[in-house]
Length: 179
Image (cartoon, rainbow, N blue to C red; front, side):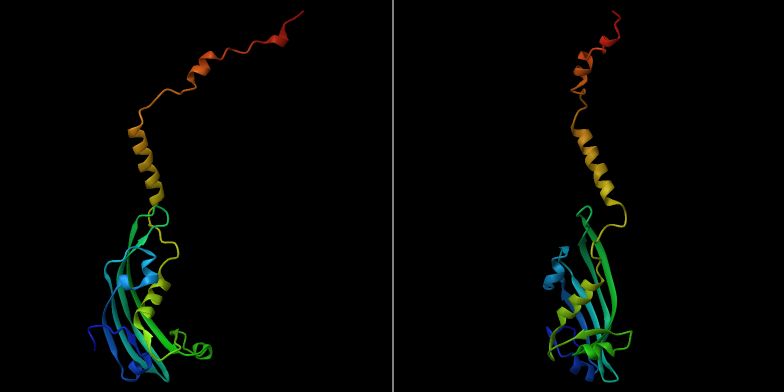
């Protein structure tokens, strides 16, 4: 078991040796994920076990993190805890992926060695909502705050058109006069 996670792994070799990886990956090292976050501080805790189911190499484990997503309504931070169980079957072709048992998600690899952070990043991106937003109606709260600020900062004034109402004379009935 390694406390420090390697950058690249050979999942087939780890499956053959029943390897185990535990450690943390800095969120800031996951380029695609950081573009979706307000804050990229912190890390992702990874706890993975490698084995085989028949001839198929398997990665099982848990990913944990607390991510700071951006609400797509109010653009404020949303703290999103992630605790995901993964179970991946390592495949090299579509045919192999189609033969995987239903409980396994395919992880298509082209080479023997892969970047561990890419596997973890892919799994996290897949579980994140496409349009994160607060559970409460944050947009109406923002409108109310804005209205309150505007009302406090701007003194109430008379309607600038009120003078026009005073100048407007009652309509005379020109057409109703008898000759």
